[in-house]
Structure formats: C-alpha cells, structure tokens
Image (cartoon, rainbow, N blue to C red; front, side, top):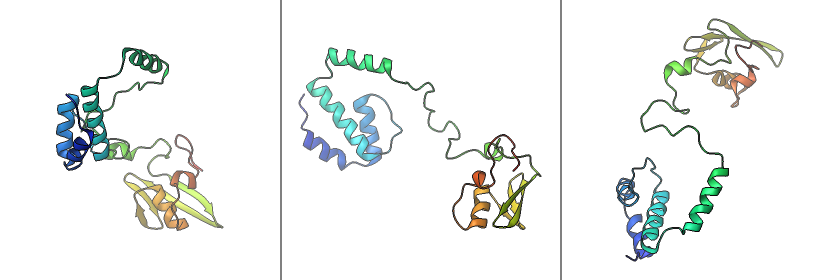
Length: 163
C-alpha cells in the first residue's frame, strides 16, 4: 500500500476536527482527546506513511528504548476526560482553601504608599473597604490599579502567614 501524501493531507485538511478524531482512532487504533487540527493531520499522515513504507528499524527501536530509559518519565498517568477538576478549573471546595491564607475572619494588613490597608478574609472571598472580591489579586488590583499577584502584594509566603 503506497500513500500519496499530498492527496492524504488535502483530504485530511478538508475534514472537521470531529472527523479527524474518528480517522485518528481508525488509523492509530486508539482514541484521542486532542482537538488540535494540525497535530491530528500530522499524526495521521505520519502513521499512514509508516504503515505503507515501513516503520522504524529494529536498530532505531533499540536506540529509542535506550534513550527512554535515561529520560525522566511521567510518574502519574494523565487523567481520563471528565475525571474531575484540573489546575485551571478547581472545584469550589478546593478553591476555598489555600494554605497560604490565614484562617477565615482574620485581617490582612499592609502599609502601601503611607496608607494602612485592611482586608478581611471571608469564607467566599475577601472584603476591602466594604467591597467584596473573589481573590486577593482582585483586591491588589483595586488598590494598585494594575494586575498584581495578591499573595505577593500582601507578602503571604507560607502556611497561614500574617504580614
């Protein structure tokens, strides 16, 4: 079986991402969570070429195995799709607790440009001058007028630090 790479690429680029994912699973024999069209096209064409023109030589496979033995390998497998929160999207319970924050009800104090600032830690956010904020960074932005890391602004370094 000989693959005409130009025709295959043209046909694959005309497909939608959903169609490419189906084609990927047909050609590679496994499902993918990837939705990056260019990557899917490249992987499918690579596999079709490998099937038609032959895969890696035994010598190349041995060398790859040697290199893999020396490499730092992933110790934790990737999570299956829909298996819970990731770093970008934490659940509400996880987002409430941060070990760098003092206990709920405590006050954070910071001297900034000659002004003593007081921020109260609440169960669902922070209170500063009567206004509610969802994060310390939002409080820091309200104070400074620019995007600032709230933990750095209030000098919270470790577990329950108070400035």
